[in-house]
Figure 1: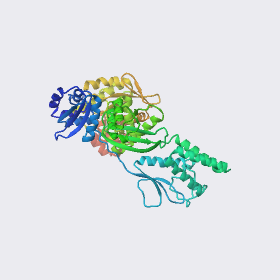
Figure 2 (figure 1 turned 60 degrees about the vertical axis):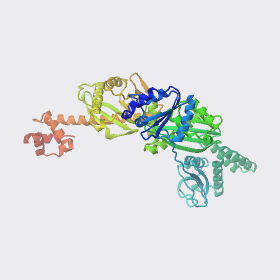
Figure 3 (figure 1 turned 180 degrees about the vertical axis):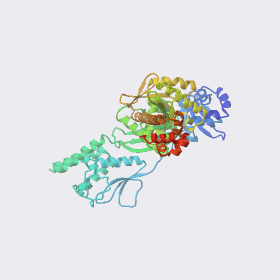
Length: 614
């Protein structure tokens, strides 16, 4: 629970003021001590909405908690309807640009597609024009668009993308992999004339400029002409090229005749931060992409809606159709607002299947990639945490995950391991080992209760940095029995953290997540499934390796007690002093005599036993 707001000395005043607030719709304007506007929001019931910020024990998201801790006072404007409040909110945010509202900052640059001026031209993506004789298409305001166009054209027309020089490198080496998977014509083998190659490049450039449909029409016309002139070899090559364009069009995302005037919006969240990507199609072709860092994460539906309202504040930017990767707070009212601004029909929708769903997934993936650059995490890690949050129905992304596993051999050497995953990665600095102290017979449930109790007693005592942070999520390596055994303990200790078990199949592979009453399947959520499997494998490895080490040490200790004059206390003293068998073996008789506190004869017998160890 975030409690930054309780640090605000003005809360009693703010609560008293809010108690008298109207229940009408309107906008509220939060201000800090310097009378600066730090947040603007809308509400259909001002009293209820503003009260939610200042009530005691409010469980705010981090961004909201920080904002509330800075509020010194607030103003409000009453409107006749919730819709009028939305319009006013958009206008005020655009005017004042408050710190805690979403502020759109995109990374715009200019990119070009270059057709080199050489005997065998290449088509490449470039960040700037050079002072050369090459032909340039652009500028593109989106490097993504230019890159995708170059990749698609080179693939469809089987043009070389290697670093070989032509004709100098003809037949100097075997063709590369691209040739064998039919993504390159194998120009390096010298089997294609310069005229035919240059004609293919020209067709690829036409494809980039005009799109797949126009290219197919022109190539089809040329194929029929070659056939009429009985040039069947050329007609065959043109036929193959047409087929390649058609096959490529099934998977490429540059051209789509059905997307006349469409934007695709995706939002990615990494617990503390969020980014959005907008992929734009105009006249059936991908024309641009924009990425925006949204700052600290908030409720994702509200954040997605606020982004749309701010991004489409200019009527010339609003397309006829906007595809979203998820729901927004009020799709009907947002649609109405965009229609009034643009003075034409605008449709918002969340695709559930098919090619449109693939497009929203693409937009979300782009947002994840952009966010990964900002937060130093890979898009796979971000996606895995997002999926985990969704499939488990968590209220916030679990940035700090702890997982526990019990390991034993019958009732001997019972131990546990705790691993920590932070931001989707193992953080070995905070791994912990537990030797079971209160359970003397094999009982995994009782062992797990002991470990969890000791962990959170340490949290409250604050004596160990590794236990000082409250986790966002706890996993137990086991089924619902483990969850049911531990959950009452957490409740008794006042620990409000989501708790789940990790269930394995007969082959010791992750199968599902266990709750107190059943299981949640995660197999279809590949990124989340891989993360959970990684966590479970890691905690198992860690606990088993510790158990094996403990068992080996206890075996050594038992061997030492076989020496007359060496009891459990002296054997333990030797183990604690030397720590490893290697150190024991390197000790001479004199040192053993001193450490164990025995006579020369016993020390010599001890020396002989130690050197019999494997």
